[in-house]
Length: 194
Image (cartoon, rainbow, N blue to C red):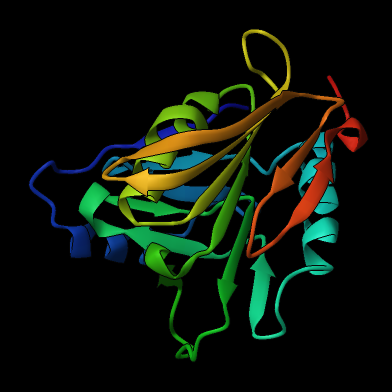
């Protein structure tokens, strides 16, 4: 099953999009995001996708400060880009949240990680980094299992407007270092390859 997009009125405001996103009954287990003002519904990720996210999360736990948390299902909002994203991993300081809060401002994130899926890899390569950079998220780690030249992992940083600088890029099998405040090495040889 591939991603499905939901039509909306182009005149809808950000608040209308968010209200629709929050109130609609979406298929159980699906990932529902707003990407460039379009609501996108994707199936739950495959097991290899989840294994990669879990291995990265395990490495991050050893270095994340006690007042920060690692999330796998936390939505973050980038209203300026008409985006509501659910990164595969999000690292952010723990905030006081109302029980009704369904998302947090993206600017609170210190690191986001996306693991590509075959059908919607373009979002992780183009739309999401532009939104994450514009929100000022310091680090973006893209694990691209479907990269044209073979599986790669790319670390982006130093956001400027809606553009990141590539800090490091490696093929699966090589380690990649995530700098301060994490200062951790991710061993991509642990990632399953399709």
